[in-house]
Each structure stands twice: as structure tokens, then as C-alpha cells.
Amino acid sequence: MRWYIVQAFSGYEKQVQRSLIERINRSDFAENFGDVLVPTEEVVEMKDGKKRKSERKFFPGYVLIQMEMNDNTWHIVKDCPRIMGFVGGTPETPAPITQVEADRILNRLNQNETNPRPKTLFEPGEELLVIDGPFTDFKGLVEKVDYEKSKLQLTVNVFNRPTQVELEFSKVEKLD
Image 1 (cartoon, rainbow, N blue to C red):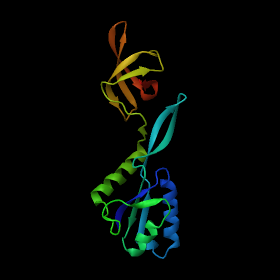
Image 2: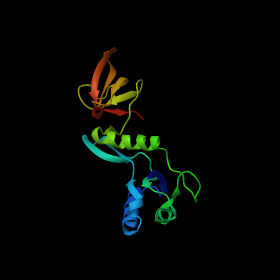
Image 3: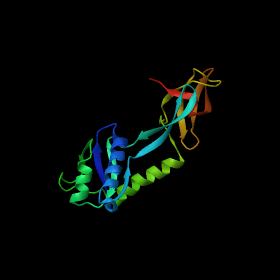
Image 4: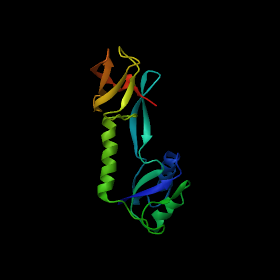
């Protein structure tokens, strides 16, 4: 079995995944299929001062299918509602992704189960506004970012002196 990518209508990836699984289970060719995945990652964001976890697709509009390609399996997938077609190859003979690419995607899925990513990414040199704590309403420059601990080091000017401060991601926000 090889991994193939199909393009789905944006926003309908989960519905496409469910209907594909139903079609596969109803067909006589279920043994020719493996996993059907919508690559998502868990992200942590701050809303109303509370940490919330949400899901974000890292390939919006695409669904991965592990299958043996033949005429029957091709028709099961191609005739599924809200699928525009396979990615790669020609419309009649789709090309699978390489095993290296598939492993990279699967590793990213497995890695994210243990460490949810922050929804907002910070970069050194970026200016942020402190929104909580003793330095509220101070602006600071990002010096270091630690995604594992969800903390960053900021240089804030206090009485015209640069002061290093370590803050959680939830205590800062990006300036517009």
C-alpha cells in the first residue's frame, strides 16, 4: 500500500474523511485500503485570559489515503462527494507520495500529540506588548523563544534601562 493525497473542498476535509471510510467499509475492496487521515495539529491559544486547545489543519484542503491503486479503488475515492481529485500524476493514473514524505507527515502528527504547538509563533527581534503581570502595557523586544516551556525572553525598557524579563506566551501579544 502507498500513500496518496486527494484534494477536498476546503472546510470539508473531516466530512470527506468520514464518507470515504463509509464508502470503503461498504465496498468489496476494504482490504485494499489502510488509513484515511486529515493531517491536523493541536495548538494552544489564549482566549479571554484562558488557555484553550484547538485543532488546526496543516494541509488545509487535503486528505491522505493509504491504498493499493487499481481501477476499483480509484473509483471509490474519485466518486466520493466533495473530492476534486488526486494530487500528483495524471487524473487517470495518480502518483503516490514518497515514503520519506509520508513518514515526515506521520512523524509530525505523532510529535504533535505529545507537544501541542502555540497558535502564535514568535521570532527574535519582534516587538510585543506585555498584557499581564507587573510589566503590563510595556513594549519589549523578543530575545529568545522557548516553545517547549511556552516562554520567551523579552527586553523591556524600565526607567530607560533595558531589563530582561522571562514571560509565558499567554502574557504577551503581537502588535498590529
